Image (cartoon, helix red, strand yellow):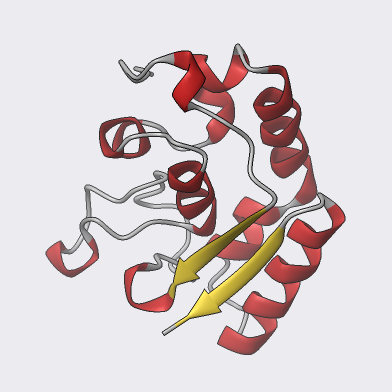
Length: 128
């Protein structure tokens, strides 16, 4: 997949980030999986999975988020040691599956994501 044209210095690791529930794509399986949704129903266009919010907080631009399903596909992430390790740990943790699962309720999903990101040393907050 394609990467960004942003300077490498702009891409950075974070210790906390926020997910806006109104812009959060979750619980709908993996049919239109991307860090930022471009396919499927128009009502979902522009929404992001939780990892998309993290990527945005790390400095990834909207184009990159739309073009990539997971962080480990992004060259700028893989060339930054801290982000590469984070991306690999997210992939192993089951965070993508928790976000996309259509069998979890909203409270259970949020609690599991908070717990998994906490294990990675990242504070996740949800806001309306």
